[in-house]
Length: 253
Image 1: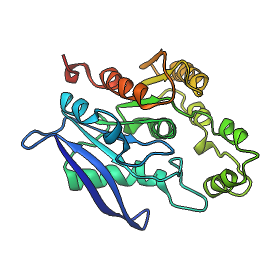
Image 2: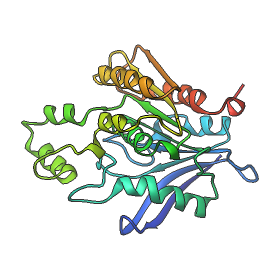
Image 3: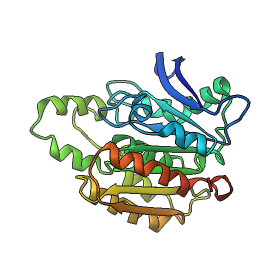
C-alpha cells in the first residue's frame, strides 16, 4: 500500500487542509473508495496510527481517504467553517481529480467512529443517492443527548454555540432522526453497518439508530459484542464493516 499525507487547498474552507490517504500500490487501481471519519479527540491520521486500516484496505483493493475536520461535528458551522459541505461535495471531487480514485455512487463509501460515526450517518442520510454504503461505529446518534450532558459546562457550551448558534438549536440537517424521517422510499439504498460495544456509553444510541434504519432501508446489519469506547473495539469492527457493505464479489475470501 501507498500511504500519503495529502495537503491541498479547499475552496469551501478557504484554506489549505490535509487528509491521510491509503492507496493500492501502482499499478493496481482501487475498486472502491472509503471516506473514513475521525472521532472528536482524533485527527486525520488517527485511524492509520491506531488500527490496521492499511492491511484492510489492501485486502479489499480499497482507497481510504481520512480527512481532517477538527471538532466540527461534520457540520457547516454557524461560527466556523463549512465542514459538511467540504466532506460531501468538495472532497470526493478533489479526490477524483487528484488521486484518480472512484467516487461515483456505486463505488463511494463513508464510515467513522463516535463523532465520525455521526458524520458518516449524516452523510448517508442526507445524500443516500451518493453512497454505496455506510459504516457507523460507536456513533453519537443524538446531538440533543450530547447537549444535555454539557449544559453545566461553559467551555463545551461555547464550542457547541460555534457549531449550532447561540441558542443551540438542533436544526433538521444536524438531526439524524429528522434526516431519516425525510426519506420515504429511497431511490438508492446504501448498505448500512452499525456496531457498538455492549459496555460503550453510546450503546443504546447505536441500538436505537440501527432499528430506525432498518425500518427505512433494506440493507442494515447491526452487530454488538462485549467492548467499550476504544480502539480495541474499532479495530475489530472496521474489517467486519467492510465485509458487510462491500459488494459480495469484491469481498475477500
